[in-house]
Amino acid sequence: MAIGKSVIISGVVAAVVVLGGAWYFLTQHGGGSENIKILTVTPNMSIIHVPVKDCHQVTTSRKVKNKNSNFFNRMFDSKKHPEYVTVTNNQEVCNTVMQESQVQNGYAVKYQFNDFIESILVSVAPPLNAEMPLADLQKFQPILNANASAPVNANTGNLH
Image (cartoon, rainbow, N blue to C red):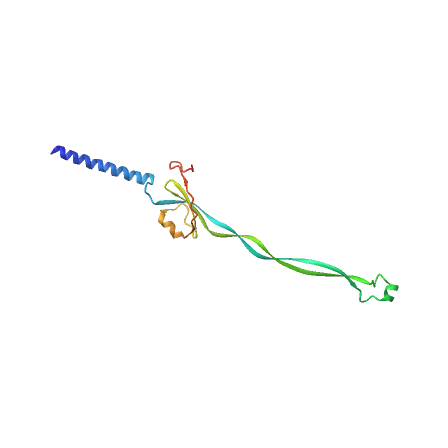
């Protein structure tokens, strides 16, 4: 009977050690953890083309027959009454051109998930350095699938 009790006690002790080790591994190494940490949040900028009105002044000149000029005026005073005079005309000329402009299109978020650095585009910026369950990242309205993974050294946090 004593041998049976010692086997049961040994089994319980072994189970406690295994469960304790599993608990330690899960809490210390993130194994099975669904929590993420927000590392960076930066505005995501896109370039768009916007039509813009481009105007400038154009000066033209041409020679026209002088209305005050006649044969007698030219004969006696050709400098004051030349046969042709220069007429200058200023005109605004406009064109529509496409100009590049930057607009913000959500936020680029990098976060650590277990041993990986992930990135995603979202509409609403999550708080920097926040820790949250992975599922909560959906609350920030992902824009498109922009995930990119890079393994991280679990001890130092550096990229491989």
